[in-house]
Amino acid sequence: MPHNISLIAILCVGFVLAFVLGLTAQRLRMSPIVGYLLAGVIAGPFTPGFVADQELAPQIAEIGVILLMFGVGLHFSLRDLMSVRAIALPGAIVQITVATLMGWGLARLLGWSNAAGLVFGLSLSVASTVVLLRALEERRLIDTNRGRIAVGWLIVEDLAMVLALVLLPPLAAALEGAAASGDGANLGTTLLVTLGKVGAFVAVMLIVGRRVIPWILSRVAGTGSRELFTLCVLAVAMGVAFGASELFGVSFALGAFFAGMLLNESEFGHKAANDSLPLRDAFAVLFFVSVGMLFDPSILLQRPAEVIATFLIIVVGKSAAAWGIVRLFGKPNSTALTISASLAQIGEFSFILAGLGIGLGVLPEEGQDLILAGALLSIVCNPLIFAMLDRWQAREDARAAAAAPKAARAAPIEIADHAILIGFGRVGSQLAELLRDRGVPLVIVEEDGELVAQARDAGFLAVRGNVAAEAVMLEARPDTAKLAIFAIPRALEAGETIARMREANPALSILARAHSDGEVRHLLERGADAAVLAERELAYSLSEMVMATPPFRAMRGDSTPTTPPVPANGPDPTPGPGTATPA
Image 1: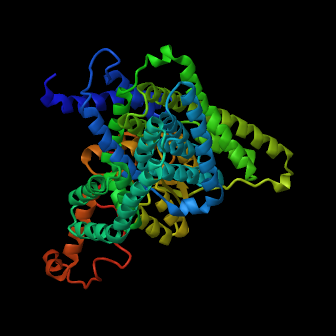
Image 2: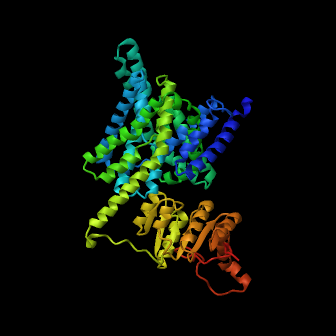
Image 3: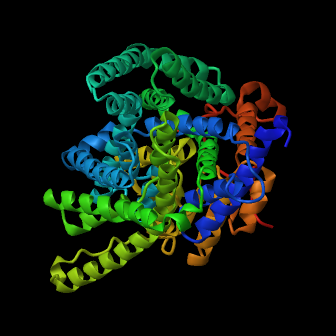
């Protein structure tokens, strides 16, 4: 293949294969990550057919790492961590230590070095953020005590892995050097130098970056250009990552993490997260595809015992350690089992650490293959583990309900004759206030945790999660509602949910938001009673305001004095010509 189209080939084939296999995995109720990794296996050199450029793939993966770590920083919540610090902090540290020791022990049995064992053990100790959060959201556990502990535990793991990415290069070099020379005196010096560089970088980011980055974002946001704002966010992420590596000698990952963390503290953090999400998702997919390209499937046949041992460390070993730690803290068995099931898999950080180990020359290729095999098997099995937990929990709940006195049983919350508002962003939040002022009872559905907190602080009943998930939709009680309003701008997602809501309640009135005539047709075909084309509504409102001003009021023969065209609480939401309804 000509070199000048190698990048195009990787992007085209990678995205197509990732989409097809990711969708297949989703249909099979597995994480799409499995599909992305398998797409990489197919495009890799160990399977017949198309083989992607092996030099370009790692660079694309590095961009994926930068944007993944930037996303971790953007969603880093010190408040969530502090609320469960008493158990999450010591629990995660002990669990990481136990899993790392088990991985190190297996590595030593295989004849690997101490440095290889350290990288291998750390890679098996950290769970995938994507897989864990998706499992918790599907079961409506994010806002429960169990969910908060799991998320706090995950934050500690992420922080530990960020630190590991910083310390592994000097630590691995010192361990290898000590093994070769029999002298470990340089280890302390090397670590001190590395920590000094990291400290200098952190100081610069906290003193200068905390002021400069928000200032730049505020100026760019003032231009009103979404394109420039998105470009600015990406420039900050990539620029800080590159600068951290070139000027301070620290990893791209640490620089990107700090850039995201500082943006998260600014008033533009939420907008930055939303605007950069599509590109982050795209390169995250390519990252997983690139990782899959490194996997040699023959290891499943050549070294089945090692693969099974790796899998058992991930699914049994570290999960058992987590269960024991949670129980020692006096938490109920249901909480301990939820934490154990959440951590019974590995993902993106494991791949980053494995890649770092290969790059440092301390982890053998076989180690990376074992990590990838363990990740694939554990991610595939994780839904099955949660399904068993769900069945156990259902039996326990039924037993507790049967044993409890009737007077002690909590009556279910009955919600009826209400409106369901999907989305609490700029449009949804204003609409919610207007409807509340008019006495309309509301249930808000929103997947962003911060917006859910804002809705609840404002006194609204809010359900957290993606309305496309059936459990989330049913929690909003469409069966007893009178009206559903889709304030989200994602017409395709809304269309599928509208169809399911219509099945749950044929009498439900459904209004939706669209941004094109095609989206209007799609929403109406899926069962919406009306679809509002935002741009036409805006044009209609502006034209009414223009015609209400004195110079133009005379043109239509209306000399009656009018009040100002825009009320204090916004225009009355009377449908205009931009509202499309079925014929």
